[in-house]
Image 1 (cartoon, helix red, strand yellow):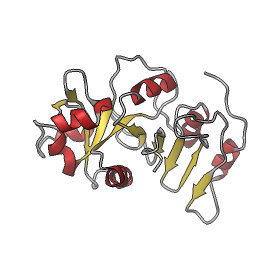
Image 2: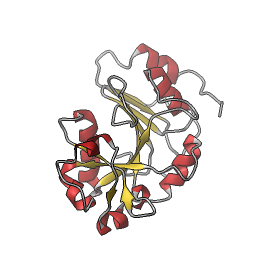
Image 3: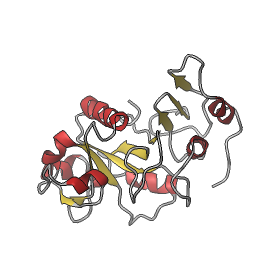
Length: 212
């Protein structure tokens, strides 16, 4: 799986989300087991180092990750509350733990967002990790993306390695897990019989942007 291999993955699906957080419709995912991933994401997204990243955690794992969380904590489904992390979480997923030992998670149930839940669940079952690192899908110094074309632009600017949508995905082919190619790959998968949407074909075959 791409996240397990160190890739930074963008998710784009459905309508825009209303509120202060990205909750799976416009999100960036990365593995949280390596604290160094935060420096990589900050570089890619031109973020300040003091800005923390947040975990997305399956509801069935939440009690093992946060000592003061209960199923009645509805605000945790919207990534707006902080909780004290368990020793296991601090040890296994340090990239999403604040310096004071807390985290501000999104606790996700399948009824909330099936597509997003299934991706996080597949990663968890494959690796045994309880959390993944999550951030808004956006361009450098720009608002969260609104359109598929803007999402592909994030990919061509190397902010992410792979862009995933419900019916297709596209990515830059890496030379290795940790040393990624700057060349845009036309690797594409689509469940649609007619192939990728016309806008995606045109973007992928165009010259990648060289702007910062």
